[in-house]
Every structure is written in C-alpha cells, then in structure tokens.
Amino acid sequence: MLHTMRIRTTTTVLALAVVLLVAVSTSEAAAAKRTSGGCRKPATAGVTTRHVTVGGTDREYLLSIPDRYDPARPAPLLFDFHGLGSDMEQQALYTKLDTRGGARGYVVVTPNGQGDALRHWSLDPSPAANPDVAFTQAMLRTTKGTLCIDSKRVFSTGISNGAMFSTLLACALPGRLAAIAPVSGINATAVCTAGTPRVSVVAFHGTADPIVPYQGGAYFSGEPIGRVLGVPDAKPVDDATAAWASFDGCGTPAAQSNVGDDVQRLVWPDCPRDGAVQLYRVVGGGHTWPGSFAVRADRLGATNTSIDATRVILDFFAPPPRR
Image (tube, rainbow, N blue to C red; front, side, top):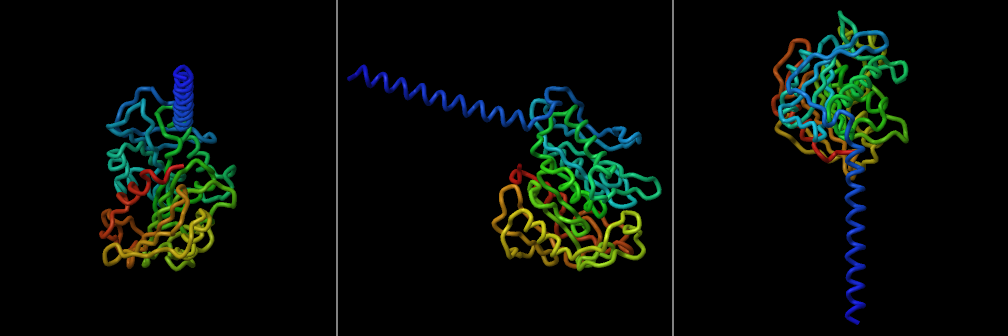
C-alpha cells in the first residue's frame, strides 16, 4: 500500500510539473509574440530626427527613446500626430508626450505630415491609397526592427487633423493599435466596420471649439480643412463617441461625472477589456490641448487647465487597456 501511495504521489508531482512547464512555455510564447525584432539590440536614449522613404518621398519624424529604455524589455510605443499646419517640433513642445511619456518608459514617435505650406494628414479611408497610412506602417516597421517594442502596446494620439488621423488609423491598421486618444477630432471620420478588432478610445473636445464644432456641422469657414482633406461636415461629438462605444461592445447609457467645474467625464459601462471608451467634455474649451499652454486664443479659443490631457492619456494607455 505504501508503495502504491508513493507511485501515486510521484505521478501527481510529475503531472504538476508538466502543467507548470506547459504554462511557462505558453507564457513565454505569448511574450515572444508581443516583442519585436529590435529586442537585444543596443540603443541610445534621447530624441533624434529620423527619415524613411515612402513611395519615393522622404518623410521625417522625431524618435524619442526614454532614459529607462531596456533592449531586453519590450517598451510601449506611442505615435503623436500634429494638427493641420503644425509640425513635429511644435507638437512635441505642445503635448510634452516625448518627455512625459518617456518618463513612463514609452518610445514616442512624433512625425511630420505631408506638404510644406500646410502640413497635414490624409483622411482617405482607403489604406492602400493613403500615403500617410503607408508612412505610419513604415515608421512602425522600422521602429520595431531597431527597438524592443511591445506589439500589443502601440498607441496613437494627436490634435485636430492628427486626432482625425488617429481615428482613421484604428481602422486602417486593424489590430495594430491598442488605444487611441483623439483631441478635438473624434467626430470627423467613421468608426471601423464590423469585424475589425476593438480599440479603446479616450477623447477630449471643447464645447466652444470654433474649428471642429462640438455639436457638428461645417468646419470654421476660415479653416481650409474640408478643402484640403476632403472630409464631410463634423458629426456631433457625443454621437461620434457613442458610435465608438457601440462598435466596441459597450453598454449604455454613459455614466457622467464632473472633473472640476468645467469638465464632464463620460464613461461607457460594461465595455470589454480591450474596448474601453471615455469622453472628456470640456465646457467652454476651444480647439486646444487641455493642460498645455494657450495658443492663438483669439482664433482657437480657450485652453482648459482643470485637466491635464497628457497625464490622462498616459494613465488611460497604462494596462488595461491591452490587446
């Protein structure tokens, strides 16, 4: 009987060992799928201007590698797209995502749009025909080939035209982005078609935005965004955000709470882990980045200081959500 008990005990231990080995192997395999080809390659921290040729055109972007970057540990990657007529240097200064994201371990890519007199991002919904989608794919491919990037933690944000382009990328690069954070621009493009992988969304929009109206309708007559980009009239922000919540499989209605005296936070309930949706409705806010310095208040409207969009975005991007 003692001999039988020893056999059973040994068999149980061996079975547990096999289960643990399988679990470890599965975990390692999953981690390997999340990492990029740039792992184990040395890299120097800092901000540099990089170039990549796309369709015969030289395109440039700022690459920020954080001080805490470890080539053996996959890092999250964040794209930060500027607004119409701006550029990569101005965007980095405006959002400070390269420095503040870097402090949290993010590799940050801040690119330049196409054009010289009026830099912009194409909103052509056809990925094959959109040169800026190809540019983003090239930046993603190059960055993952030279740095250790967590493929499941790739994010995109931007303001105005850059926000619109971020929403477009969520659909044009299905399954490649874990979350997006459009500031003053969630209401210009359509949500993804059914069957496209979910993407988490945190949006910011001022109710007094003079460029991309919160209630929808024509863009500011002095802003040639429709003519340059070929976009239709803006949709109401509440409707546009609710459409993303519906796409992601969230419940209704959104729970509303006040964040300070002039910001309302809407959170859609019962969202899946990879499809959280939130909206920061900035009461009286303009076409600006909350928490940043004021820019052209006479033309763009007020800059809210009750919330810090950069901090909120980085908090939202922290796991979860994670695909």
